[in-house]
Length: 154
Ligand SMILES: CC(C)(COP(=O)(O)OP(=O)(O)OC[C@H]1O[C@@H](n2cnc3c(N)ncnc32)[C@H](O)[C@@H]1OP(=O)(O)O)[C@@H](O)C(=O)NCCC(=O)NCCS
Image 1: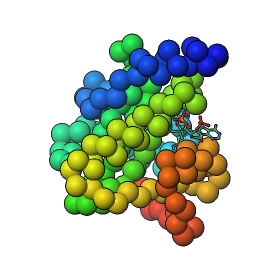
Image 2: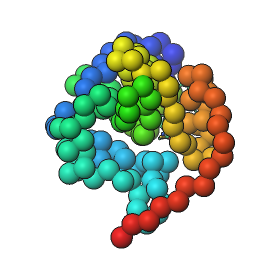
Image 3: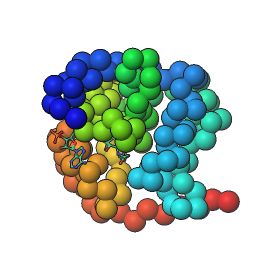
Image 4: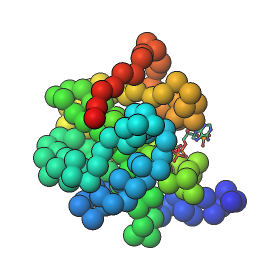
């Protein structure tokens, strides 16, 4: 894809609040995006009912969708606890990556939350996920301690 075409696409991106009508898109994209899985067993933790409930009771959390020509192409889910926010999940449809959509989602999340008084942002990313690590580095996130991810579920 040429830079000109990319730019034309980026100019058409709209970042907006997630709605119930986006639930299928978000859960489907999460299910096919391995980088968001907890494990091969538990996969993407957010199912339709969980997301529906989160949208309803989100309070200060920012649940955003990126869309182009009325078609959702990416999402971000950010949880807020007073002045601190965790970027829980962010994903862009494979066909639309490397066009600045992830950046727009993250910038909008940070812009909105700073207005609400949030001053600290953090996130966890799997150590093999160099693409996402680069992405967050470019957004000026610094590296914290390496962690073990542990889980339990049935
Ligand atoms: C991480 C992700 C959200 C980035 O979205 P995106 O829309 O492709 O990102 P952008 O186009 O805004 O890229 C911004 C910067 O991130 C870095 N980046 C993005 N994709 C990259 C890649 N494939 N390789 C290296 N760096 C990359 C670059 O620094 C890029 O800046 P540049 O285009 O000037 O080089 C996307 O790759 C994705 O959905 N990955 C799968 C899910 C995931 O890993 N989520 C994060 C963990 S929660």
